[in-house]
Amino acid sequence: MNVVLIGLTTIGLTVDAGSGVPAVLRVRGVWAVTAGLVPLVVGANRRRLGGPWAMIASGAIYTLAGASFLA
Image 1 (cartoon, helix red, strand yellow):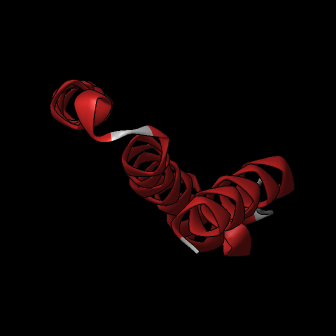
Image 2 (tube, rainbow, N blue to C red):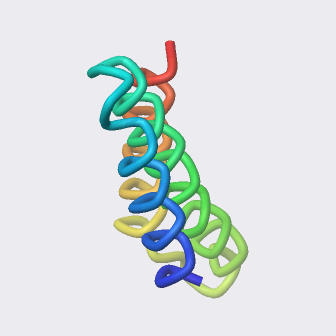
C-alpha cells in the first residue's frame, strides 16, 4: 500500500511541479492525510489489545499536518 501511495504522490508532484508551490503543497497534504489515516485506524483497532499509543499519535499528527496543507 505504501509503495502505491508513494508512486501516486511522485506522479502528482511531477505533474503539479510546474503549477507552483500551492499545488505541490496540496499534493503533499493529500499524501500526509492518507499516510496518517492508515496508522491512526490500525492503532485504533488495536487499542483494545493494549493499544499502540505512539502509532495513534503519529497518525493523528500526520493527518492534522496534511489537513493544514490543504486548508
